[in-house]
Length: 455
Image (cartoon, rainbow, N blue to C red; front, side):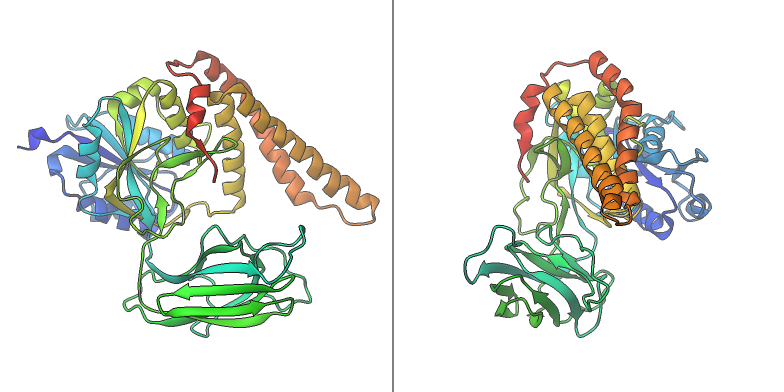
């Protein structure tokens, strides 16, 4: 009987999501759950792409809310979660799914099952993997001799070819490879990405009909000699890299694998929230359910009583860290969160704002400080705020004062960015401190720091 199934409202948010939103909705309407116990709500967050008209035409069962403004992820999701009942549908549970994600047909049932195992579970997180599948190889770097303290430990990747072609879209690395650094005007380098001493390099196969063996060619160099070993399903390549760039050809076979995006969220040292398992190859290491510090708003099931008790997202955050903030607030009331690996979601990571963009950097850096001011032990919040003040002073001195004194042009963009973060933090700080003092707490702030892990 369908009455035995709880009523679930699934909220997705679209901001010029276009076909991604339609793909997400297509997967949601195929959810294996009684239709009369499932409500899909799309919030059109001020889009200019006529998504509401397209959804009405293609998915007439989807409920559409149109605030006619961009409320951010926090405000838009709040609108969907708090929308009054329609046609007598009063949800028992609320799910959030990013519009740049697609769900497996059986994604919902395991979340509901796990939610029902204990009354203090406030949220259950799905297993989120990156949308494409990958092939690739691992690498290790060893020094051929003594390494000075000021030298990077790895090698520098300066050019990449996939199957002989320039293709930086499909070239993907884990966090062992640093973001691209500035390139000298006279150089023929196409990028400058330094590696650590071990990590992984991958080739994306999104939307590929056939996966073929390919050769990834890397042009690499190092400050002093390094021995680099590359291992793939097609074999092993070992080479010596020095100060002069050399090309290394690494063959890759057709063994595909998934890469983890989020399996619950961690509290990292310094009060950083982040994806548990991020960019790890899925080798089955997260195939068991686990309690986690926080849940990710990209794919999660929330208990109605949890939201009634703790509240919804803080819309002052706009986007990023709003889910970690709400998780932390719930933790302070004694709520727990569980990761459920049987619920699979495929995610196109950071399609809306873009990792590394100004929007991304501003909101992640400011919102972390605001979250800590509201939720963390005083010493953690104070240390983070003081660190941002010191960073601002240092950057303004070096970029705007010291450079002109040495007859160099001032560098204004970075100083302006840091100033924007700090001033916005101070603007919202009084409200965060007020919420901190008024918060209903049943657990000490300090006790929650046992969840802190080193990345």
